[in-house]
Image (cartoon, rainbow, N blue to C red):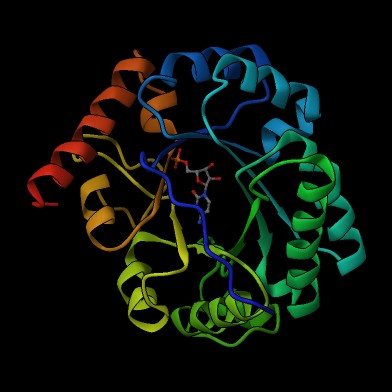
Length: 253
Ligand code: C5P
């Protein structure tokens, strides 16, 4: 499968809006619209609100790229159908599980390209692969028949994903340097587990600040609760955007 050129985002800050409440999601999107580089909607939101809810959020922040994080994992035909079904929402990014295998990854990529072509969408959704869920330790991996240590499994699955048409991977901040070392500058690295220096860690164990993650090679920084759980989400997003911009200007990230 031919290599693809992943999309690049001038503003890497994608705000993860994880709620079942479409009204709250739209209000959050509106609040962060001037500071964020994109909005991430995931399973929790999509299962509660479907495509209609996604449209409502997009209407609240029409200029922001959408990251649809539904982590597809099924037979290739079904994943291709799911990609076609969400293509009219014009996500810039969508996720699949790399462990679905080569044919599934190719099917997702091909369906994204075909659907964008059919719908007249200039840039097809970039297919981004999840490798090993950060909730799995080495014992868990073995229990589902995968070989650890998990860092090595992340490399194997990234290799498979990129070889079969994924534009990049979702990875923990602590995996960035190793992945960039192995796979170079081209693949899109989408990174959750980002916490501003003064924020609570929540249940994220392997965290970095936005500036640290950019410096380690992140293209997209996924930040949820430090913004959505703040008393003033607009201010929290603006501060993080400022922290990123300041670090990049000084090169001191
Ligand atoms: O609230 P928080 O900043 O922890 O949100 C992180 C977002 O990234 C959530 O939407 C979560 O589902 C997602 N994510 C993650 N860890 C991964 C993969 C995705 O936290 N390993």
